Length: 434
Image 1 (cartoon, rainbow, N blue to C red):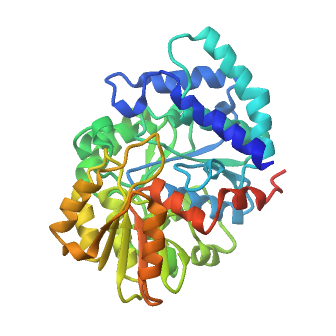
Image 2 (tube, rainbow, N blue to C red):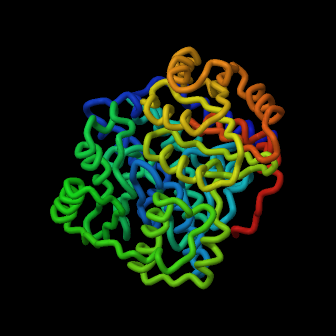
């Protein structure tokens, strides 16, 4: 099973080497991405027209909001699919129903019987622009949710909103935006207002819109889009105050994400049976993830200013003596300011890179220059091998210390394999979706 699964994943990943217009390049006309996804889904029977959606966008907190929403709706008795990104350790983490990931057999069946034949037809019919890796995974998810007869699908936007492939859906019962921050500015725009307008593109006619964003200028933009599209703009209530929010939801930002999910449930008149216990036990891979104790090891994929601010808030609530920071950033990220804030709470710093070949890591020399402006040189270490950096940190740390791995999902997800391998995940899947 593992061998076939890896072959299937390799095939999907190989789609990245086909020349095409790239969403990540910030093209002037990005409507092509939703259009080509729609054409491809038409060849698959338009599964997006046969499902009921909650569409979630935002700069940060999309994953948390989507997954806690899925868990609470499942507790209320609904069969809820979720499509999220990025994954941490293995690709199938993108697609789940309840607490169960799509299984390799279902993935293989959909790939062989539906995706590959549709790919061949699409290639012959539309010679200008092939489907991307992200769009292929979205198609697999929608087919799987349709096949499994999901009551609801929580759909997390990949990047932005208006031109994101997830915006191919014709309708959503709820459209939600967590917040607006300065990330992916080269694609979405160089101001919060421009980014807000792009993300507001997910708002659909007759949908209910809700957000935890507080900036009045941005809320004005959302209200205007709702009015234009004849959607209902709903104010959020402070529902989260009725619950204890220790552990994962102990930070201000995570409370806001939880509150957004609770407001969505209230709007849908969905009443989970065990809300408090689900909040208490909630965990998310490579998001504030405590993977080990003595020493405490936290894995987190935060890569922008807002996410790293939340992470620092979470870390400072932990009990530890010294903090060992193991960090790598993507080259295209504006990481200088949040990196300096991380450095200020750190005692030892391990600069490294991630191993994924599709994205470039930030220069170790550039990171070192920034680190030297905050820390003494003797507390800064550089490793081209992230596993060597981790091993050194684990040997150096005392039992009452904390090791924080962050800066990129590519780093935290890779190093997570030291504790939870891809093989372990695949071989220990829960397989009772049917």
